[in-house]
Length: 128
Image: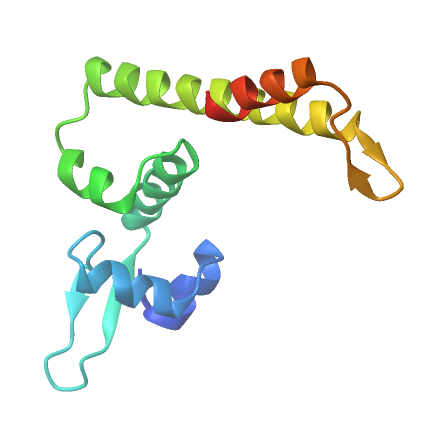
């Protein structure tokens, strides 16, 4: 069965604009294009392909990466992405520590560092 772009967008819970953009950047093309009306048509078989594309995005892959590796994903690429995400997690943990440190120094609506040691500690935290 073939779907017009609007029907396919509803089926996938995605905007028509997104499908048009993915077509424009050659990431996800319609199965058929009517040359007279320029209507895009999609098939049931494309649902899984689109779901994979969304899952890759949710896993942290950019559209450029998905396009680049579309037919060449391997274990190494997945491990690289995993390492990238683990680094992001560590950076976020450091940010949380900084926020907690600053929260502990709020007095009357201001952040107050009381001693030189705290100021030096704060510089170390912020410069990491």
